Amino acid sequence: MANISARLSIVKNVFKSVFNLNKKSFLLANTIPSKISNTQAIFFSKNLLKNYTEIINWNREEIPPLFPYVLSTHIHFELVNDKRFPFSPYGLLHKKEQIWCKKSLTYNSNWSITAFIETYRILENGIEFDLVSELTIEGELVWKSTTTAFKRLKQKERSSKPADTIDTEKGILIDVPAYYGRKYASISNNIDPIHISTFLAKLQGHKTAIMYGMWAMARSLSEIKEIKYPLNIISYFKASIPIPSKIVMLKKKEDNVQYISVYSSDAKVLYAKVEVGMG
Image: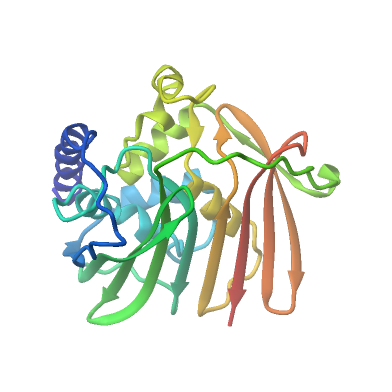
């Protein structure tokens, strides 16, 4: 029932997004948007958890530390479609994700997520903002994510940067089939068309459908042999992963931090950089 409720919320907010396409951006220099907040009890089935662990190749007994993020997607949609949100959610870019997890998450019916937006930053070619989500289990704050997103308001000339020289033979080769986009969309209730249809993705300027950045972040964490809490995970999203494709993950450890870089199989494109601090 809870998953159906989340999906109905997503459908409702997809229609809201369409009506918000022409929503004019506020001049944030003159107007300070009010804080937008939403708190909801969270329920999930063990089948949903099983599907998530399979697509990210998670082989531990504990709940994956990024799982709460997929449970909060419908809340995020509601926030960016709120009438107080200062611009259209269409075309938002996920630039960075930071997740703190205090301890191993437990399967429990008393989960609650509060998500809010209150910080905006004006950049040269657009507006950046932070969407914060906090998970409490039995009243204890155990998990927090900060999603940094960007709304482009004008084009900026891109500077070309030579790709790093890497040895892909030392990395982990991972297949990303086309159906992964649709499967992850179903699990996370994030039905953004650029992830589920090449045709619809092309209408938005992409050459093919692209994979979710949060999948790459979670998949990277699955390659770490030993997890120690508390966890501090930061992911910088550099480029979109086309699907189908193959990616290469390269790992490097320094002290208590594990670094994972996600490249295209030919090493020409850096998709994401993930930093995992433990203990």
